[in-house]
Length: 288
Image (cartoon, rainbow, N blue to C red; front, side, top):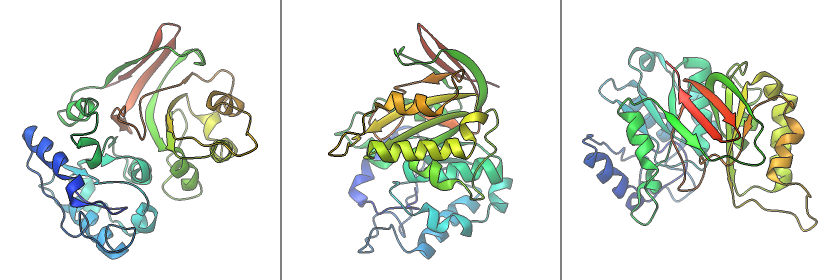
């Protein structure tokens, strides 16, 4: 477990460590970035965070890297990382939110898969931990096979492609950087937290102007928690914002349980999946 982004109190990681041990994994917690109080926002200086993540990437004995939390900070260190040793001995990188940028970078530059999945705080006893089963299944090597409830706003259709996505803010901010994968034929998923409707709209239009939404083969719209409105209402629902920017024929599934809530399934970024959206529901199956 490393802290490549925002600070996390060590007490918020103990339940995670214990559950991972209950799953029969040996767990090592990086002392330089997890629970090390720097007195500011970050889990250590840029140098410390980059060095700790680099050491974990390079260590051939490590089979998975769990990011302690997101927040902000990955953008400051991503270009310092060297993936030469990681390519020889790849491992799962686990996290979401700010870790979206690392997922994109791994998919774009390293050509490897990673897990968009819950981090340390999701394991705390006061949280709903039922969705952690999907992370456990992924770590064990089980194929993903999801079925989601039908939604009135869904746009029916089917598509096959690599899963790519994560936090909408990070996706929009990645455009123009070396971390952006080729979006042709991808299955894109998006989520965010605490944003105003107008900022969500801005991010979506940024994806559209960059050509993403004309290249992808399908879209899964996850949880947009604690969405805010301006004093003068923006005047559109989340479903309307999305439908304003996507091609009419693009398959779109809404209310997918991925994001900053307990209902957060594990998605394998960079892995082929088949998406099927019908009147009866949505299926997403890993393809090998």
